[in-house]
Length: 370
Ligand SMILES: *Cc1c(COP(=O)(O)O)cnc(C)c1O
Picture 1: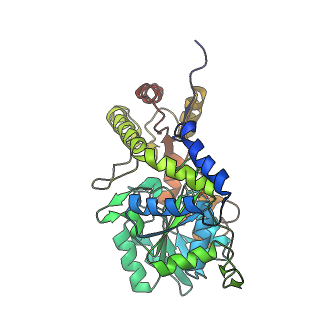
Picture 2: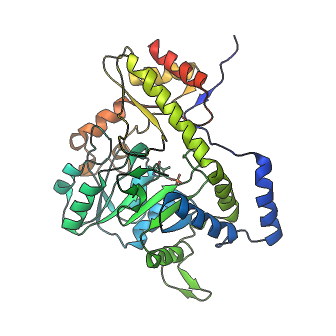
């Protein structure tokens, strides 16, 4: 028997290369490479319509989107956020000179726990930055109530939440701003890319200025903006990907259902409950390796690797354990018991449109033989 085929935690869903050539020809003919060209405008319109939002500004990546979102709302002081996320969430705060204040997560959703937010509010708190972890919507109503009571802004890191719908339509319309990532590993990708969902045209205009150095016309600069513009190449990729996104999401849903059918037989492996009424994008398939499983989480991770199955420990280590954060009082593990436990137990199994049913069975068989 040769080496088994590698199974990756995620693989991008790439359309046929030949289908991309006509887009390239248009770029070569027009010689418009960036600065809000025709593909950029088309992708903004197409995404607004697909996602069910009114205004959206494309970005070069999600991280610059988060940094710009904080600038757009002039956030300063302290921002309440989750330690259970990709490190870019908190980094966007540090890049703005803002102090992150970590609050623990809910054990069921692994999202920021609204019941713990109020105790962390100080006179310096100006905003909340929650994350829709794995695409599961946060408790947006509870967060909105707190934000209204204390006059705080809410910026959602919605990097995982492309196409997710909650009880009242797109989850992306909640909060003051939501930021998407179109990185290669995400459900919808433009190789690198991102977007800010804006509540109104005026906010979008401000954000469009901020992503172009603060220019409003050839000679007027109104803010210390950044270069956050998405290129025509990436926008064209997005337009092509968007044609296939429903097929990709449907396949993810099948794989999610197959895991949910097979995994409950295995003692010591706990799956997070699905979203109920939520329309999920099945971006990730996290499991919790409990203490009654024969192997530790890390031993299982290694065993899968040895079988050419590449799972990921999202999110371990917690953001609050990285050197630039761990000195903060709120970063203490005593303040974050639920997140600390989740980071110790979680493993994200492979899920992507590229997987076959046999691949999923191979992953589950490997877990079964603990
Ligand atoms: C991917 C990701 C980001 C960063 O997005 P990029 O487009 O890679 O810059 C931010 N937050 C979360 C939760 C992510 O998963």
